[in-house]
Amino acid sequence: MTMAELQGYMMFFFTIFLVVILYAYILHLYRSEKKGERDYEKYGKIAIEDEIDDKPVEVNPKISNEKKEK
Image (cartoon, rainbow, N blue to C red; front, top):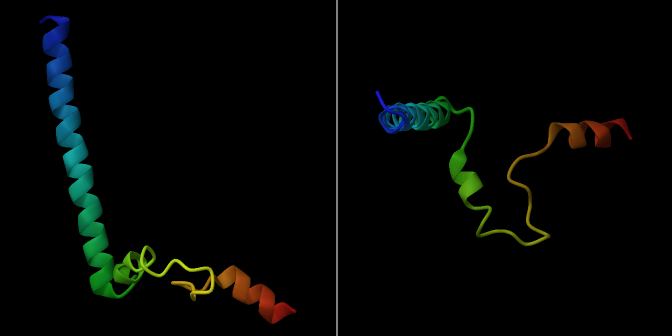
C-alpha cells in the first residue's frame, strides 16, 4: 500500500465521519426544536432585526439576576 492509497482511504473515511457528525447535529437541532427547548426560527431573525434598539432574542439569565439584585 502506497502513501497515496493510504491518503485516499483516510480522506474517504474522514469524509464519512464528517457526514455522520453533520447529520447528528441536524438531528439534534430537529429534536430540540420539537421538544420545545429552543426555537431556532428566532435566531434566523437576527440577520433581519439587527438594529441597536431591537429587543434581544433571548433574555440572558445572568443579566436579569444582576438587575434583580440591584
